[in-house]
Amino acid sequence: MKLKILFFARAREIVGQPEIELTLADGADTEAMIAEVVKLYPPLGDVISNIVIAVNQEYLEGKMSLKDRDEIAFIPPISGG
Image (tube, rainbow, N blue to C red):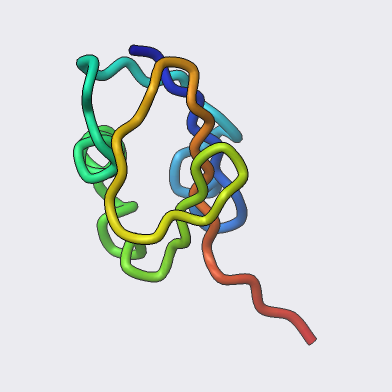
């Protein structure tokens, strides 16, 4: 299956682009997707515990199965003044 992965803020800086297309085996879940993204971009492993994941514009709570063409966003905490 093909997934659209979006990166924001610090995650985008690490990856070097705003989005990628990721291909995973059918039936893969969010844990497998996160592991694959961190494998492709190892520096994400340093910040992944602070990143919120959204699947199809809904915040992820726990683990879930993914479907072809799902859109996943990696959203680091935003700080400002």
